[in-house]
Image 1 (tube, rainbow, N blue to C red):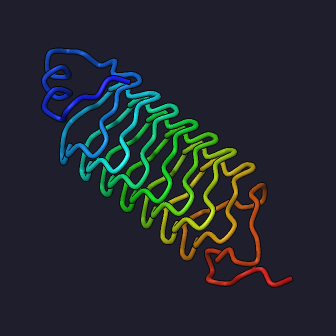
Image 2 (cartoon, rainbow, N blue to C red):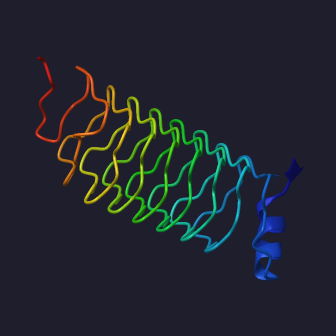
Length: 177
């Protein structure tokens, strides 16, 4: 796996390159960078610092974003299928229409995230914080929501999701039956 610095990535991106598959960018600082349509599939961005970055329509399939900081980032229409976002900070992130099929978001912070129209089918959200998130028309089929906090989440259709006694529902209650 090729390792790039933030400066090397940004220079290549400015020159028109968009394909950065299988690149390691661990711990890079890409605060407020505009990286629309970039392909970072199968790369490693663990502990990367990406607040306010624009990754709209990015290809991030099977990317590793362990403990990455993505608060307030733009990820609308991005493909994050099978991505690893364990304990990632995604608070206030725009994930409208994004694909998160089979993504691992265990322990992720999605406070006030916009997931409207997102495909989360088969995703793992065990222990994730989705309080006040917008889930309008989000596909939650076969999503693991055990221990998840959904307090005041908007338009959450949990009928095909897996919840447990530790799941906090949008109304603040737990299923004790």
